[in-house]
Length: 111
Image (tube, rainbow, N blue to C red; front, side):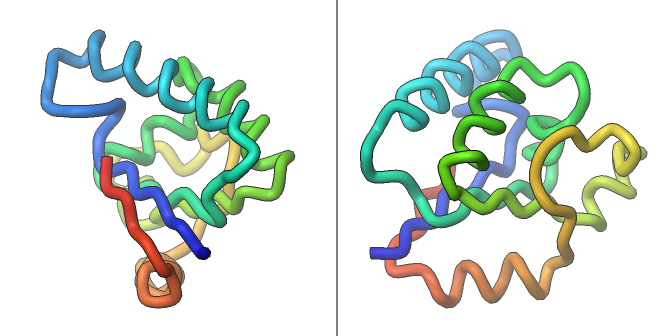
């Protein structure tokens, strides 16, 4: 089964930023330890901040990428936030790639 996870926030949930970050660290830590991993993790809107310098989850995202999970980051969003040169993990792509990943997925989890 092709599972895609979608990050649209700089963390998890609708909570204060510190709590969102803490939850993202815990979630990605646990996900990295699972045998069954998603095929892709997509990042757009504020979610692109998770792959940039200073993010608390970079280590876990690197582990997932090394385990074969494709990380796709929205180029338009990076440009909007002025973060293109701060990406430290993942592959910069456009909305066509994100749309294709969503259409090919058997299951999409939006966080």
